[in-house]
Image 1 (cartoon, one colour):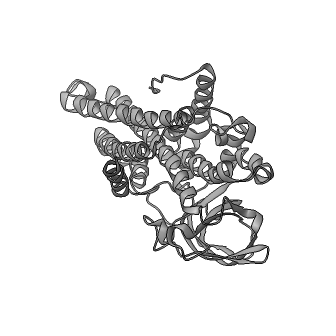
Image 2 (tube, rainbow, N blue to C red):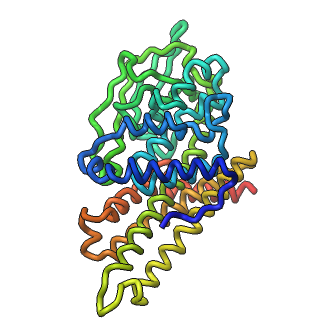
Image 3 (cartoon, one colour):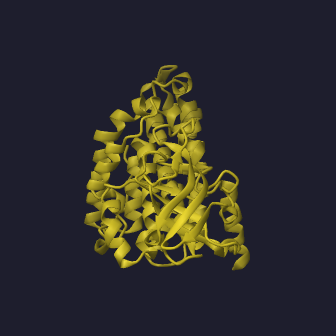
Amino acid sequence: MPADRSLVSPDAAEVIALARDFARDELAPRAAEAEEHEQFPRELVRRLGELGFLGISYPEELGGGGQPFETYLQALEELAGAWASVALAVSVHAITCFPLANFGTVEQQRRWLPDMLGGQLLGGYCLSEPHAGSDPAALRTTARRDGGDYVITGTKAWVTHGGHADYYTLFARTSDDGSRGISCFLVPADADGLHVHPPERKMGLTGSTTATIDCDEVRVGADRLIGDEGKGLSIALAALDSGRLGIAAIAVGVAQAALDHAVAYAKTRETFGKPIIEHQGLGFLLADMAAAVLPARATTLEAARRRDRGLPYAREASIAKLVATDAAMQVTTDAVQVLGGAGYTRDFPVERLMREAKVMQIFEGTNQIQRLVIARHLAAE
């Protein structure tokens, strides 16, 4: 059954209803086949942009929907329950827009942001490197100033939309001044010297392309520097706080879908003369699943509400990402158990949901890194 939501306004209710309808009618019927054949649904992401989902939480004056972040996250959750790869595309694209929307000049925003928020341009986020994932301050990609240009050289790893993106929000070192020597650039995907490796072969989220990107003397104009030189790491980390909430919402959507499939199966599958949901062993397992989904959603939305009120939320975002993704792993694993042998087959979606949940404990900062972030906040209080 659909999640029972408490929404902030009639407008929010309309947004969630539209997301739910799109998920049911457009995403759910296509997800299994596309995932099996590792097909990225670019046209669906473009349509979501046209419907306003890529810019829901950005201000109207920038071309966004002007909705609270909590509304955006609940829409994302609805999409994720039907097809997590599409929800991830929305979340990743949203954080590629974050630096420009929050740190770009008015001229830069007018030039690029409408097509970014409208879905005509798809973005990739280039922060991680082969040796610098959890420690972004250790990145080695360089951007050397050459007259009116920057020349970028280096390798970026784990780039969502690698090979499909129209632009990359890329972070590179402009000086040797440690964490203060990193800058942010908006790099066109067709720039000379930019090469995309074949996609990674993944156990889940196979409809979402992930690839390594090489920059070999990629030249971009100085007008593609976003924010001040040397401020890139703080921009990247601010974007990741929002991104972690996006991943938390996707995890909640995946967990809710797994719970729904498990309950539906348990009501119709009979053993010993009654539906298996009426056997205490299975009933209690389903109860534990429900008890994991609800607090994961509540924790995620509380962090979003702090963001909407302009309060600090970095710690809460890490907590939400940790709680929600661990819950998703637990709930999807238990859903496979509820369905038994059927759950281990591709005839039912729970095995796919389980494979998708695993990576959510890893990307946007592993859950071990989230614990480190949380502990640091506690130590600083």
